[in-house]
Length: 269
Image (cartoon, rainbow, N blue to C red):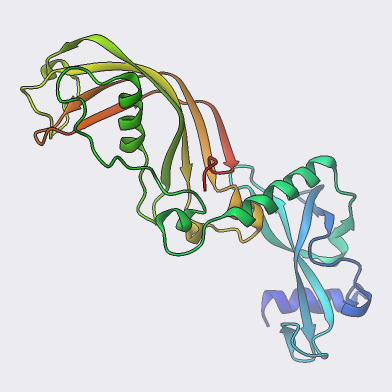
């Protein structure tokens, strides 16, 4: 006998199972769940149904007894809302708060605008990472602040469809007025042109690390739309250099501040 069957049998003999026709809760209802000696706010994700032969899917009239609920709620803040089986006696009604409604509307809007298809961004529910069609300007001298910021974006935004996708916003760069030799870099890029000068940068950016939708443990809409962590780098430093093919590469590095988990991807689908 499986653990799920034992749970259902106990609940049924205790007189706490309900028929679908008289169910107290339906999918999407806001509820409280009794877990870890406290009541935790959540939302009904799925009904666990049983028929004469045991647990079943609602495909026939005989599959009509609710034995438990799958409820979405937060067990570990680092993991975000996840789905957990909950006994009938451990679920009670809850009136949604203004924050519940805000998150519900935000989630619905984000889900509606997510890209579809086989693009890289679609694998993460985000826009595609930005690329640079050309990296050759300027031919001589230092890049402008706008050019440096664009090269930083192209350098930092990347993903492979499986590992977390890196995206950035609010990139600002200031280019030093004088250059220096590549030998003064602490970590010299392997493709750097030793004959070309290096230009120091300082600036700021917001970075996002987004999990691919296929890697998510949770199935709820919130998890599928709030699949990014974000952080700000207000005091970043870096450099711009040319490689041996004459292409510019610029990078900014900075300790993250104001780190946030389970946030929406940056705008721009």
